[in-house]
Length: 128
Image (cartoon, rainbow, N blue to C red; front, side, top):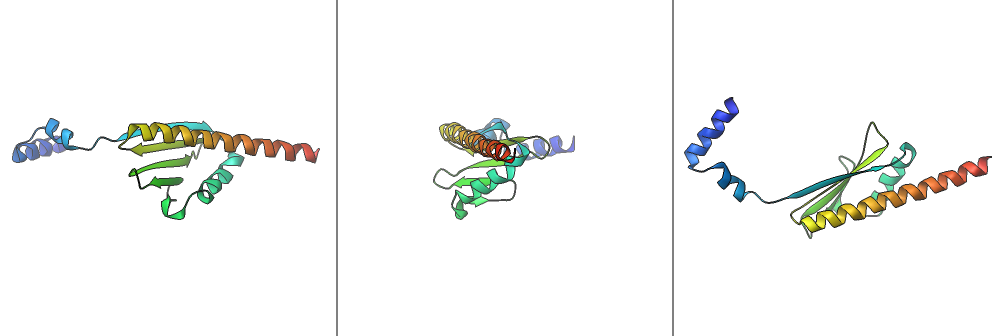
């Protein structure tokens, strides 16, 4: 209740409406996609992403966040802590960039998982 009262007070002082404030906010497109990834592949995938991108475009706080400074955008590849999943988040002012980047990284992750699973199967066959 207090927050609503303060919001109304600020709107009254500024003589603005919520619609006016919202119109001034930048339009951002944010999408996410989840990909199945075995527990045994998660670490190798994260290492692969770090090694395949320039260091100045990376942030390694939560998963691997890759910045595209040209578009003022980013994509975050985040391993799920409780499920065998990888979550991919893309964020930009350009909706087309978000869609294309999300598709690109989904395919990258899936290809890496398939490749690693094939290597694991070959290793398992050699043991027997």
